[in-house]
Length: 125
Image 1 (spheres, rainbow, N blue to C red):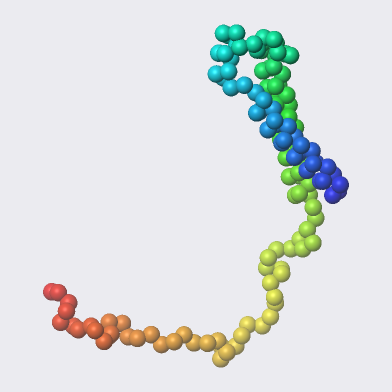
Image 2 (image 1 turned 180 degrees about the vertical axis):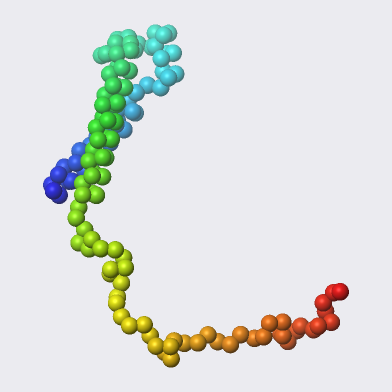
């Protein structure tokens, strides 16, 4: 099972690199203006618009393959059996509660409103 995971990860990375390369090869929308004024794009391997169609279709196919490999990796990651199939509470240590005599008591708080700097005459009426 780990061999399949490794194979899909390698294919996933190669597909991602191919998508990056194809996107960088494609022309932007403003690049077609130069070919209209004799930019020389008509003498390319695929013709004036053939390269755009070929690159965009290849990018779409690779994007679909990338999506499918992502789903395959997610399935393989979630399909692994877990060693402890129980809940969090099953793994909590079981024991007797501590007796009340061993529970530390909180420190005594000073009385409310009876601080050293408070005077009853400071309250406005």
